[in-house]
Image 1 (spheres, helix red, strand yellow):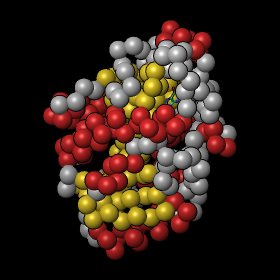
Image 2 (cartoon, protein in one colour):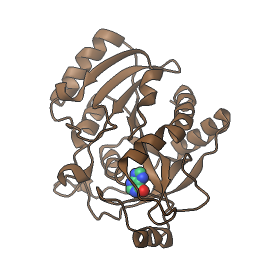
Image 3 (spheres, protein in one colour):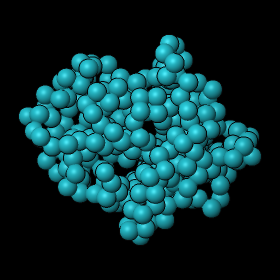
Image 4 (tube, protein in one colour):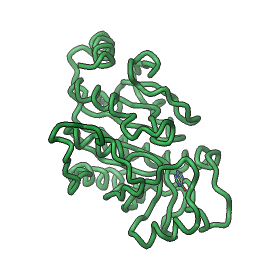
Length: 269
Ligand code: HPA
């Protein structure tokens, strides 16, 4: 068990003795609103958890919040480490290993992303059906066990995807579905790269999530992921892209995603 898991287990035993905690939700840039929806929240800063990321990206709080959502106990991870911060694709491994050690089974990842298709405008929500690892990086490089040859054919859990579709329908929100392409960042893409992404079969582009999906499958966590579309990809709108735009636009789709996740959590597991 990781040191962070021991600390979290002690805090959770104090606050929620005997309750089961199966689901964790990672919040992307500007999607922190979900934290305010939790009942009886317990906050633990990443800085108090050994090996948790020291996130330097604004729009990411850097805390674990455990509380009740739709009556179910969930763990919200407000803040993630990105490959582009230190060039470390496995930066989230200690976090995900901690979830596994605590007995969590499901991980819901959220992110802010750029759309590369006209029909998916900023403010949309996209369920990630599959991904393309365009960065070429892999968080399992250096792993020595046979488990490194992790199958990715059904990386995004089929039952969780269906639960997302059902929850979106109940929420009355449109849920797009598509392929997310991971670019390393931190610079945004060029217009030529966005055209390439479209030709290669991507619907959205972003700088996170894929390494976490790979690590989750390696560790045996079931995973689903959703993007909030904050902008059209470079060259599609004529505007220059910025992280400020990402943060300003994220709450638009973020509120829709929040509604969907609230229903989803009540319905799953
Ligand atoms: N590209 C990459 N990452 C992003 C974008 C984008 O256009 N928007 C939000 N995150």
